[in-house]
Amino acid sequence: CINALAFDSSNSIRLDMEDSRVTSDTVELAIKHNVGCAIQANHPDTLKHLEELLKNNIPVRLVKGAYKEKMTNIKDIRQSFLTYANMNSNITIATHDKILLNELKDTHNSYEFLYGIRRDIQESFLKQNKRVRIYVPYGKNWLPYAMRRLKEWKNLKFVVGNILKERLNNVMLWKLFKKDSGDRDQLERLIDKHNHKLEVIRTIGSVVAAIT
Image 1: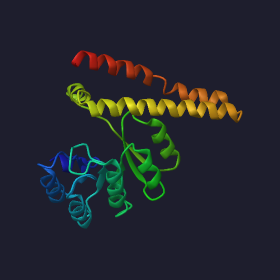
Image 2: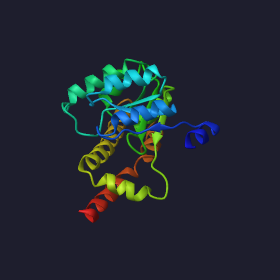
Image 3: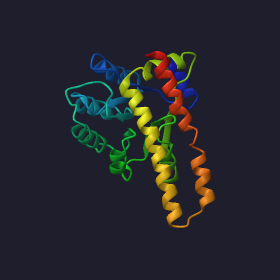
Image 4: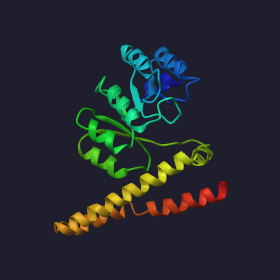
């Protein structure tokens, strides 16, 4: 089975989480087959599910939650996220939310990010000796998957917003280096690594134009 193949190759499996129709079944499946499981901070049953997973030593990946639940206020979701994260320092933190990351960076060591999103944060955490994993869609159907996700406005807004945040962060670093007479060449090399993201924005614009 897939789980045995993963074990033999020193890899691991973690189940992603979908909407409330399958949340409990996903948790039960993770416990039955001893594989990791994602948990959503905005879900009403998360405390119960998290306690079950931790009791069975199941690796947990904590996300804010992409599906609409009764909890919709971002402040409430962030508070729930922090509450659950602080139940166990081994919980993997999977968010690009800088407010949450700043709160948890001194207590947690494992983080997950989407490929190409906020690489400035990813690099910063690596330099702090944090464990950083990158989510990379792959396989023959990666393009239809990506196109389907980009059709959802909230996902498109998230991607473009974070690209701009990273770009803005680079600009702020540039101004800081100029002010402090830092190593201009070093910063230029850093920023050049990320300049292609402007092209990504143009590409996304073309994709949206093609599918709408």
